[in-house]
Image 1 (tube, rainbow, N blue to C red):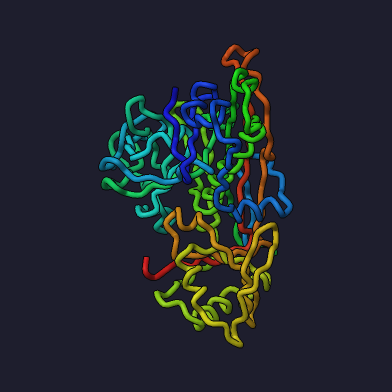
Image 2: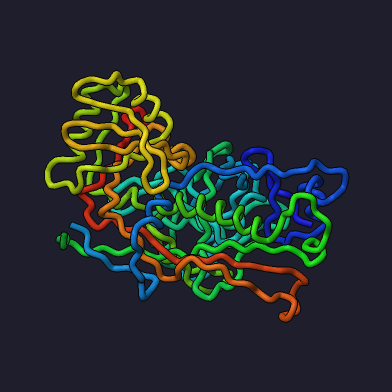
Length: 423
């Protein structure tokens, strides 16, 4: 059986294999009736505010994977490199795709078709320095991942044009993001008019859940069913989607193993039309300047959301309330609990996003106007049952969770990145 994958709070996960009585007894010996405790505690992961907001508003149907618009307890989510990463051109796999070997300290938390963010390594894309993003095309039977550097700068030589990945040293932090399936994938590895036209890609997010027939009929005190597994899978799926919706790199990539194109969605971080530096000392003067910048100059609504990493939340919490800044009262909107930061310019709904911490933006933030964020859906979120018995593959109950979607900011001037000067 596949080695169980560690969770963020001590849980165990089975990837790239169905859930059977054998591997269940190894990964979770207290699950099946065998002198076990009388309950199972499900570990709930951190919230996904961007995905939550996108589902509370009305979504638009996308007729194709490319969207044109006008713009006036889970598995471990991060690890480090176990060996130095040799950059350069890599191994040519055809169609301009070059594959590299990436050896991490926890290869088993990654699956084929997942995306990986390296927040500390930046590459130039579109005149900006952006974090390096990989796409996993394969896994070695021994160790290491086969990856494609999707946004690495390209060089042209005698044999053609190829992406040149930067080298990285052992210990470099890497982040597991969402999966990106190809159009023909049925299954996935288990477990105001604006002046310029822009586009984004819908990304096909998938998650497959299986359990064997013997496991289903086995005597279990916990009442653990396929629906419970679906719930846990949806949570993990949404965590990956949240990272892509925030920091994803818009790319159309040819997968040399599957022989198909895969679409990766672009995150809203790079779509914002404004950026403001966060000083090392955050005080009342900075907050007033922030509110002025966010709410003046025809910049959309008078109520916006401030997504922030833990460092910025800590700095804001130290500011004393004054007649210029009122707060921080608690309010619940869209099912999310916010702290209200009220100024003479407008109101910011402040919420901590652990995705900022995980993706290297702990001291950063993002001012979002939810009225000008649109979700496009090519394939609505759905759960499809697979009959793997009739197809002669496995004696299991299987459900594949799928959604093809993207987020776009229709008015870039209404949104703003907050970037720490200390970074």
